[in-house]
Length: 136
Image 1 (tube, rainbow, N blue to C red):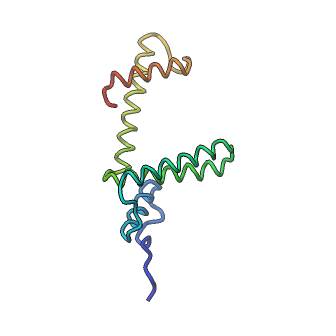
Image 2 (image 1 turned 135 degrees about the vertical axis):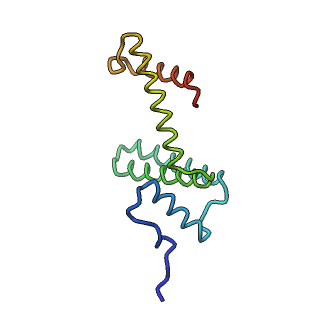
Image 3 (image 1 turned 60 degrees about the horizontal axis):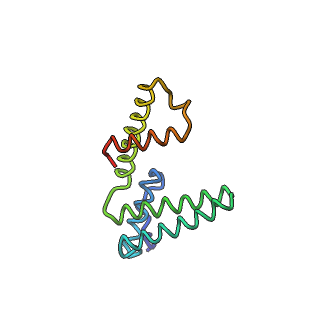
């Protein structure tokens, strides 16, 4: 009888975010899991430190590898917190759209266009939109 891998039921063609969560759930089902959110957060911080080193190296493949590790660890953090990473990300997508569109409306009301403004001015508008949207 052939041994069964914890990953046998994880679809290889699942979207990357879903697959990361499924892989981590499968590993956790056999006991390979962090004991709590704090431990996962420490792992995220470790991966961010490695990403920082990769960014300093300016090696594209190393940066991509470390970014993937950070994303994977973040998905695990969300999973360990009992939340859905796709829901969390989509919530942030909607929040960003609301804030950005508030920036656009503010610029238009002043007869301006964001594409013609400095990044400094855009960031100021973003901070204002964040305060006004009350969704932080």
